[in-house]
Image 1 (spheres, rainbow over the protein chains, first blue to last red):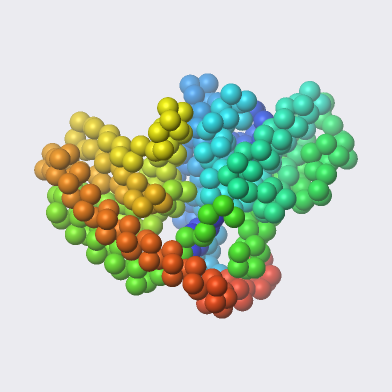
Image 2: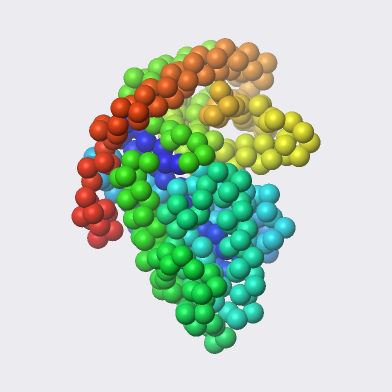
Length: 195
Length: 163
């Protein structure tokens, strides 16, 4: 949940990028990091293995500017996508304000996408959250590859509730900021409701 | 929501800073941080400008979460104190009131024994302040969120952030 500090006039929110292994969660964060002005970002931390697979999480703090005199800060986290890191994934979902599900558009990864999405729902439920009530965005990544499924097919499998969705290619950055802005906006609208 | 939102007001913020400021002197520490279990930095005193406080907060919370997971696996509720010993600097990390994390960074001008002793006393004071804070924000929430700064924001305000 967000942390509102009246003393320092700051609002802090936590966004988690979820998805199957190698779907491009870390690449999303790396692109955001590269393209953000130095004064608006902190250090990006990646707790990864020697082969650059995420071991625990990536972390990127961003400040977006002020709303009504309050500084808005977003903390971006990724989870480790590989199936056997489930215990770590649960920990990172603690206190989440918004979720981005990064799907791998390639045909052969559809089962991995479905499994990861189910896993997201279960892990959120364990923490007392309901995915349908959280600010939530779906991103169809790797649209540049030749063997991708159509967006209609992906939507049917991965986005039955019709939440906002974006096509992306995280390596070139296409769709990355659109995704981030959309989830940040949903979180702020949620805060406005005064949850 | 599984947890109530953490809200900090000026009065409690000052009280918290007084307690950790005193702890900094009494424990001969270099820096002291208070971090929310979700990784948000609440406050820091001492040589804070020398450190990347945001990263420190996030990693501390990750550390506490991971050791908490370990604790549950062996049937413990949590490990309430962690100690990391370095060549020059050491970290004493403890959970206060089940909700926030107190991080004390110290070198050989202090000692683990002294830090533990002083942390214990300060933790009790901090717990009381945080309990008061929780009650206060719950009461304010019941009365309606009229003071909430985001209640009045418009869609334009939000859009402007991204322009």
